[in-house]
Length: 183
Length: 203
Image (cartoon, rainbow over the protein chains, first blue to last red):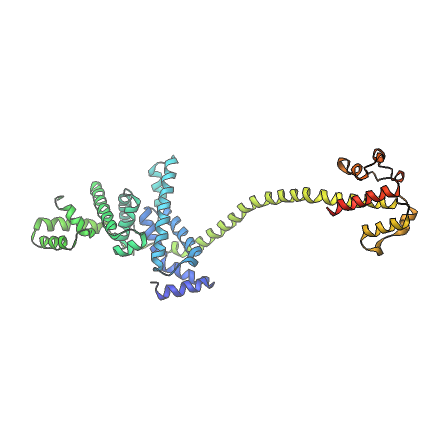
């Protein structure tokens, strides 16, 4: 299940070779960031989750059981952390006196997407995705952006393929509705 | 445009079964209306796709690992600091508690020893007195017998503070009213006190 390279890197890291962990980070950091970014819709939260995910990987790699691919395992961590961050943000927003506009400006200045056109599109899609229930959003991202198969998504989320298809169908319809409203 | 939307989205989401999918694909090939709707929705879905390869500020990723490690170190340090807030008062409380538990018994034991020495010194029968002194000191070589002869104690020193009339109960005689003057007691009475003191120490 685990590619030879990942297997070797994990073994080396568990034997105390810190540089093996650095290589794992190098290999997966962009995927981790992108998934978090699409789930959370802004750079600041995505950065927070990315760092947290790396810390969890560092601390828990010893408990990785090699039954799934390393990235499936990492995906589970990103999903859990992203959902936690969404909950945390909701609570924060509930008690916050700042308006949405000032938050948006803060996020925008820290963004690492260099190209303005891409950034604009990303923000537009993120705004539509934000309206989806977090678990639907998760499936939409994995299916639509990361192009994972339903079987892979099922391994990550622990949901049935039938349930995932239904969720993706509803997510797709809702996102299209929302993006059409904007136009 | 909305007419076939559900069917098309079911097709995109893979929710159609084998038979439904074949029928849909067949219809798609000859129905211009369905085909137009299909292409329209497809273009919308494609618009939503974001290329994961779009250029990102590489400095962020170059810095990510050191930032993560520094965050982890800070967290470990603050975890330890938080622990100290709990450990320091606990240690202080335990120390104080141990002081109260151990100190009084140590003080009492030394007081009993001094008292026993004084009681034994007042026994006029030298052989008996010597026997008790050996018992108190444990090591016969360390017993200074000349001390006994020359400086016979008759009074209990003032710094001996046996609470709750402990000494009175040791004497169990009328002399207890005047227990500070040991030379008023007989050798037998002094022996009883010495034995009782010994028993208390063993307990």
